[in-house]
Length: 111
Length: 121
Image 1 (spheres, rainbow over the protein chains, first blue to last red):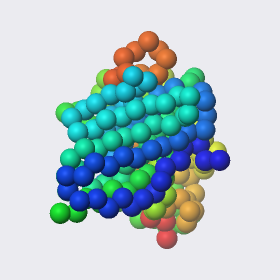
Image 2: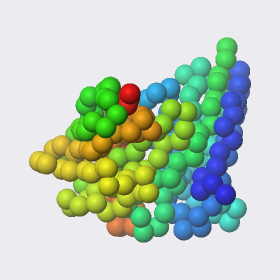
Image 3: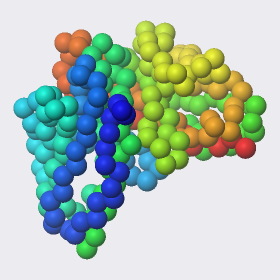
Image 4: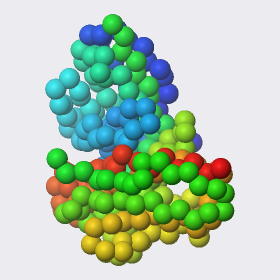
């Protein structure tokens, strides 16, 4: 089983749509969780950290379910500029911030 | 906003040659990392570095790889004898601290440089 798994997509959605991505992780010692955004051939950029209580940043909402070992990202009112690959990343307790990335989920927002 | 800078943006080399990829982490950060991403694949951890020594490394980071912080600002990745399969985008990253040190969640966040595309011919 992969350490961090994501549906590769692509998710093709119209502008204004709501879209949700899930990510599962296998190591129960995972302690920190993140969503990154990566544009083609660019560096990952931190979108948001994910907390047990859930957190929201504008149109983006992230949730963590420790019992089921998955995290989610919800994007409301999709914009064309949201088109990118969304990477889930986890770090393990006791590690030096070593991030394990998923392979990413591609999102394409069309007019 | 402070950022991690990497040079060069592109590096082409012949198989068997040595390459050095350079990074300048954010100035108040203490933890430094190298990741790589082969085209079409996921971002993979190579090594983390703290207090002038390697704190963790992956299976990819074999004897052909080394890292150094030669001065107070640069952080380098050296590949001694490049192979075709070393062709990838190499990302440097840095963070203020790490999780579990009682620091805020903000301080453990990794910030990535824009990467060096290494092509081994």
